Length: 72
Length: 207
Image (cartoon, rainbow over all chains, first blue to last red; front, side, top):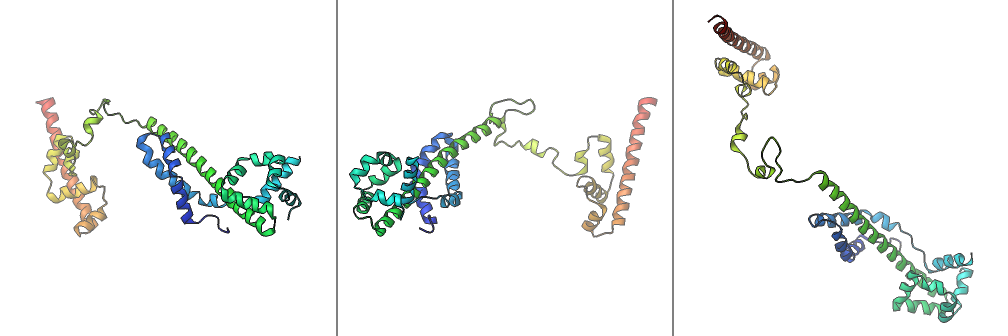
């Protein structure tokens, strides 16, 4: 888990998000849909650095945070 | 190991679900435990809270949480990007309307002009000869009296805006020579033109 997301995984991620992308295409005019699809995919690839930088707590950290919050 | 969490792990699942109900109500925990594999790791850890088990749980949860965040991020990215894209596209369409059957004052309907080259219009004024840029008929007459070379030099100088040096390079001659050809040509033009104009004036006023 050093590197959180490999490039291959990013492609898989885009594939798995395909239904969501297809749905969002309905937000625009049908003539622009192919353009939009391409731009979204590009945007996801561009945001790779951002995704890789996302931090996630492990179970203990998450639990500890919850417990301290509850105490207050 | 953390004191807080070790205390947590020492209880049974039923006890935890009763006393920490708000913890289990959190969507991320609910989703995490929905997966039977994750649930098994969790119950195993509760049964025997060894360092290995807790480490395993930590790692699995971390990956799960990370994936959830990435998906959340992606979904909002896709949604907001598409909305934004549409806004931009709308603005673009609004600004640059494609009006096919409006009639602008000067030249026919847009629809008539698309994919339809007018041969006559294309040829009009297309030659680069000096005479095609002149509307004064007398001057065109005067131009006809020049030699081909004089005409060529003037065309190059005035329609293409070339310098004497450049024209000289084209003819493989000296710039001085070109300069004199040019001067002579202009003199000739002036002579013919002026004579003509004087003739006209004389006819008009004296004839």
